[in-house]
Length: 324
Image (cartoon, rainbow, N blue to C red):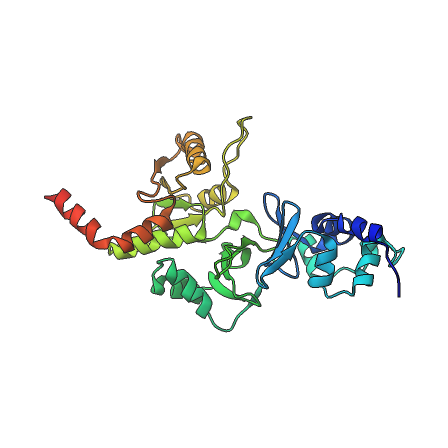
């Protein structure tokens, strides 16, 4: 059995997981957002700021050594060999690549496996206040489903032919894990098209906000499918340099729906949402009637929906008094 000194063990522990995967298993890394990554095999294992956390299992660590032993199940000596470069002289880049890696490099969308039921998704979205019939409709049309093995809520974006081209996921548990499936094309982000002759496109940062708005429309006895709804899959504030592009999902939808004349922006009440709204009004204002319609209550549209649910009687009373 190989013996490793205290100094060697300490040296091995200096290597963080992100560095290890970048150097030896780059095909296993999936970028989530910003400086956050997950692994292709475990989408609930998040890597950020020099540490990692396997949310579905409830434990984490900092070093690559901890990952190899606790997650991969490697014997300690084998994990040490991998890190110190003694396991093999063959470059890990020459190893046979998995089917998933090949598909990812070819730009193909890698959808998570689908669960036979939607219980956790229904429970999670209902708890956010979203109308159950709206959830069922989206599930039936293949826009939402529950994944395996982690039972995340997956939001699917499809192209004009109905083919899945984008998918984002969100944990149904309190961990607040979220990200995008490998191979996702942002321009096909989660959306629900309205009637063919509709002239309004409602724009949101997230799929949850989109579904929340649909629920608000439904509660107001309005047809939530009459007008087009688009989630951008996130937003960022324009930088100090002023360089900022219109989100590809918005550009694509405006190209596909040439009848659109009005754009209603329902972006968040934070610095990024307000800055992006101002930039979009400037960029698109000459060609469209662009309206800024953020949440009245709270940070985002889901906050507004949940506030309305909690305070429905108070809101009704205020509305009646205003009408009088």
